Image (cartoon, rainbow, N blue to C red; front, side):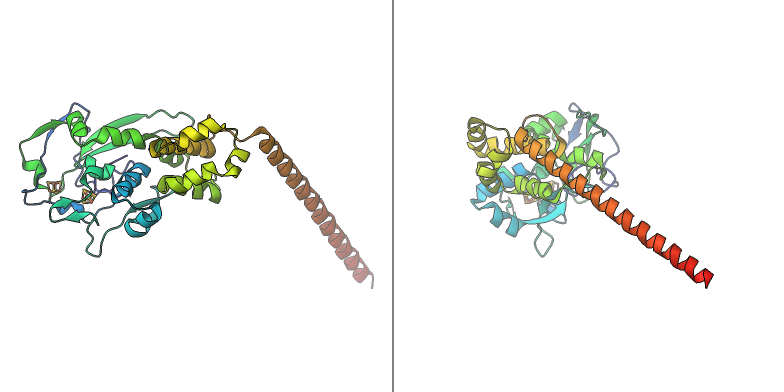
Length: 312
Ligand code: SF4
Ligand code: SF4
């Protein structure tokens, strides 16, 4: 994941804006100079012409602060898109008609305490290089610095390690809340399009990623318990508060999209599905046989007609 505001996306996009990314891998102990403050000449210059992908936690936090429903948030502040190089649907932050963030004002960020993860990272980015296959471990993680010409913060004397910057900006908490969701996106990306994801599964991914209230209704619905092998206390614990719901949604998506352990389809449902698949296959075989017989008959009739014609 990269988290520089002006980078196009948030996963492995070092090549999106290469001129502004300093070509040096940073660790948590790497040092850099930077300070952003309200009297700096470029104040809020970075809050326009941006492409900020919103994580489920970003959406939850901002809309809770604004005290609006997910529907209203999505309508006013978000645009749907496919998350980088995958077929998983997500959203990015809308910009106003001047290409500015809807939350920026002359005094700065109006949602500062709840600003998206990407805004917290800036001007540092993080990259996870995830190798495909079954292994879920992160192959390599490092940080990098984005140095855009309009940003004067790099000329300030305040020095940080990347670790200190992350603590100061509250990044660790955001990362903790986003991690499992980002791993889902990276896994999908590393699988490529070989494995199909059904349209209903994509819709549930979008719902879980953008609207936890709707996802909660889905989990509370009779159909959910009817389909999954899950007890009431687990459902109650998951629905108890937004953060529990968020974490449960990640587990649910990992199980349904990638077959991860934890939330299994009920055995009787699996049996019904297998019977349905078997019946469908038998029907397809019968149809194939019928088609073959009909073709054979047409071919024989044609052959006979040609022979008859040759005799006359
Ligand atoms: S959310 Fe805040 S920090 Fe992020 S781009 Fe908008 S105004 Fe700037
Ligand atoms: S110093 Fe950089 S991050 Fe701070 S307001 Fe200016 S452009 Fe934005």
